[in-house]
Amino acid sequence: MAIHGRAYITIGGRRYNTKEGATIKLGGESGEAVVGDSGFAGMQYKHEAGQVDCTFIASDDVKLTDIQKIKNANMSFDSDNGTSYVSSDASNGPVPELSKDGIKATFYGTFKEV
Image (cartoon, rainbow, N blue to C red; front, top):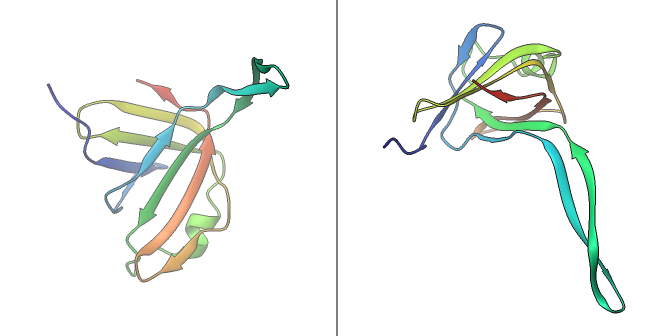
């Protein structure tokens, strides 16, 4: 049995050098409890986009502006346990942040397990 420990990020056919700790949420219906004066009343649901958070290693061949420009791209999130998730509409969300730790970025899209 293989256990997830690391993810590999590929965008537009290019595998990026990312740091350990990338995360994915597939998206879909998200529930929130509704509480009234008498206690739990039920659930409210909303649809959420899929999301990938990762940190790119900030080398001379990875430009902050290039990461920021990613829109409607093919993206894969490949786990070291053999499971993969793909999106054909991944787009950069909030403005990526560059620090000594690398380029922190969030992408939204429709992710499916393959």
